[in-house]
Length: 275
Image (cartoon, rainbow, N blue to C red; front, side, top):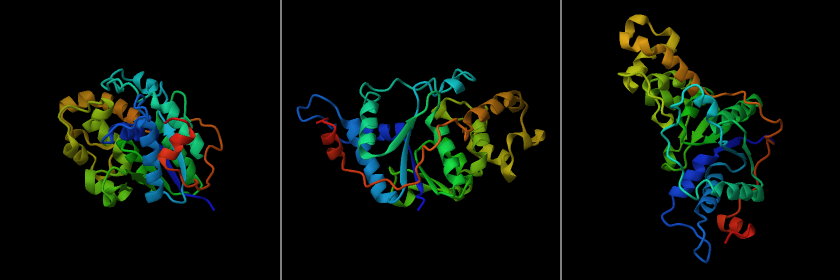
């Protein structure tokens, strides 16, 4: 039996773990903060129980130099992001050990952002006819929802709102999932420090992209002169927003086998001697 696939944005889940608990999780002597690894294991187990029973689970992390390729095109790309809190990134090595202990495969591909690796693995799984859920809040992944067998999962929302599918995008944003890079190039993406074209917000961007247009198909008479001057920049931003579905990954990363039931977070930390 070929299992459906849950792809997990590892840094997204780490941030939820680090900032999402009301109290810090520490070692028994209260000297070492274990919130990152404990929260990650707990949230992943909860996602499996509630949404991914019988799924293969695969976790993808950003590499340390993952943004360099896009930043080489535009030095402002993600330049606004603050340095992570002490302890947050330090949790990563423990999280990877916890995943290994739990039998969950993961990857941190040199020179790659997680969403490009996720896009590539999703494309691979869909070629094999497997349904794919992506656990993330990264809106760049919306462009993958043109395939009706791909969904986004946000377990931080109320149960009835956790899944986003391609059918939700047009009513919500006024564009198709496949138009997402064009849409964000026009209106901007604050999360990645992409400013968009001055004077174009979400409603105007959706109007310009009506009838499934792409940037190349927007009639010139619908564009202000100031917008036309920025068009080369918009085309460049669109390329930065597009996800790469053909990252050069090792073969056989995906097993197509369901993950075993994940242990409770406390048991994982106990097994790793982290208490």
